[in-house]
Length: 402
Image (cartoon, rainbow, N blue to C red; front, side, top):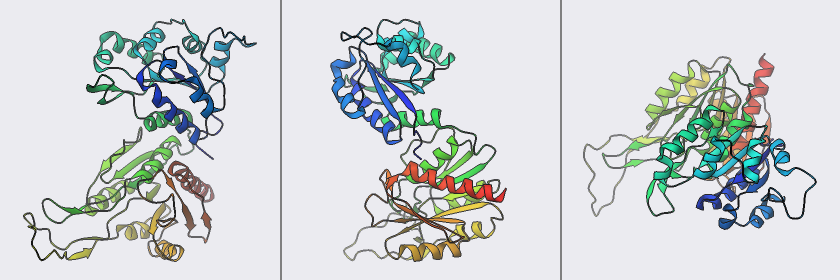
């Protein structure tokens, strides 16, 4: 089941240049299963046409408090009662000011006053406007009344300047919505350790060897586990991904770093999900100074790194350990061998030769193989959905152990 399946979200779009990003936000919410309807201010329609949202949402876009064609519903009251969450993205300084002071002079602001659900704002404006005391006072007032705020980011602005005020990246806004709507207590009292990303091993003071892992799969598992109420520790190699909300992130770099922090975190955990792409090799000796280029090329003397998951699996007791197998050939056989050798409860086979799987993409195609002989192939789906399948399996195992 998708994280936002059957959730209803009213996306309010106010009049800033970032309005075009609301289209991507809507699509992100839809990919998670949400039904999205859109309400726009008059100025927003100068940046993006309602037809764009209508074509992609397959629903009428609401723009007028008193539509010319008439409506049997009191539109703003209907919109206030329909959604599970109202998201305003972008939220301009003008709209924020109206909300903070209870003003309602168009459809969107009237619907906000009529809202009977959580409200979330993603502000976007020039830096000096965002920093203005009146705007900050209004945001503080809205926060105190329970409004969720997705803070803007630093970056290039419409004026050509750079600073804080840029609309949060659509993926971050979508994640904040999921964090609000999908939180459950199913894993309350449980502690889950997730490893993610790549490791790096130095060759000399300038160079290192690594792999292509971005950490997306592990970050997805960490985020979804937190949404289920678990205490989550994310041991992460180098990654450009934003940390999942309310997750304790422990940054590491080398295999030794990851081993030390994972062992430490697993000591008090109920489960370990080892998605990290831990290097199999390191340099036998690290050069003390930069290796100079010569005409003869370079031969590296590599030795194998310690597979610390073997020891963690062997000593797990009644705790749950999940591993990943990244393969390019003989996938099922190699994954099953690792499942046994590492004393795992579940191994997730990821075949790099399959389209839509692997590093750096938002989807995955995996097969889940468990220690009882169960084999569960999954079609291509988002990494968030794969994470949910893994966590569902862990939940089923805990129920059998109870």
